[in-house]
Length: 358
View 1 (cartoon, one colour):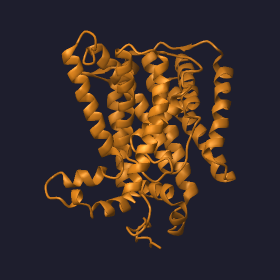
View 2: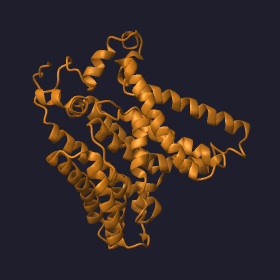
View 3: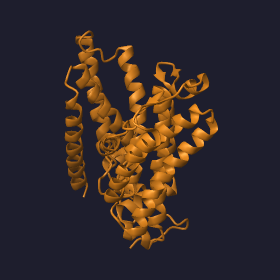
View 4: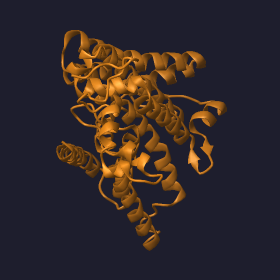
C-alpha cells in the first residue's frame, strides 16, 4: 500500500495510472532515460496516447498535403475556405473532448453533454438578445456547470452508474430545450466586440483556435502539473487506493463533472456567436463525438489514463478524416458510420497498448 506524501498527494509507489506513477514508470524506459532534449517530452506523452495519436495525425496530414499537391482542384484540402471550416469546427469539438476526457479519466461518463451544450447555447442567445450581455455569460456558465454537477450529485449520492443517469438526463434536457425555446431556431444579432473576441480572424486562424489553445494549456497544467490532476488520475485508476491515501473520490468526481460543464458552456458560447442561430436539436450526437475524440486521443474507457494533448489531437483527427470524406464526395451518412467504427477501433487499439504496457 502506498503512503501519502507530506502534501497529501499519492506517492510514486501507488499502483494506478496517475501522472506521478506514469512518470515514475517512464523513467525506467529507454526513451525517457535517453540523453538529449527530447527525453523529457517523450516522458510526458508516452503511455498517455498523445505520442501514438500524434504520429497518426502527422501521417494523415502528410497524405492530405500530397493529395492536394497532386489534385488541388478535386481535393482542395489546403484552400482558404477549407482551412476556415476546420479552424472553426475543431476548437469546439476539442474543448468538448477535453471536458469529456477529464471526466472519463475520473472514471465517469456524461451522455447528456450534447443536450447540455444545446440548452446553454439557447440560454445564451435568449439572454443576449434581450440586451443582458453580462447575464447571458453568467447564466450560461451557471447552467452548464449546474447541469453537469446535478448529474454528478445523483451519480455519487445514489451510486448509480453515470451511463444510466446521464442517459436519462440527456432525454430530460432534450425536452427542456424544446419547452424553453420551441421548435423554431433561436437567432441573435451579435455585436462587433463579441464577434471579434469569439469569432474574429486572428491571422490565418479563426478566434476559436485561440480559445482552444488557452483552454488546452490551462487544463494541461491542471491535469499534468497540479495535485488536483494527480487526484483525478488516481480516482479513475483505482478509487479504493485513492480513498486509502485520503483522497475524497466524491469530491474529485464532482470537480470533474464541473469541469465538463465549464467546457460545455464555453463551447456553446463559441458556437452561438459564430452561427448566430441554434436549433433545439443542435447538440444531438455531440456527446458521442466528444467521447470518440477522447478515446481516439488515448483516454481509457475504464478511467485513470489519458492526456489533454491526446484529446485535442483526437478531435482534430476525427474532423480531418470527416473533412477528407466530404472533399472526396462521400455521402453524408458515411460520417456517422465512420464515427462508430473509429470509436471501436480506438478502444481496441488503446486496450492492446495497455495490455502490452502491463
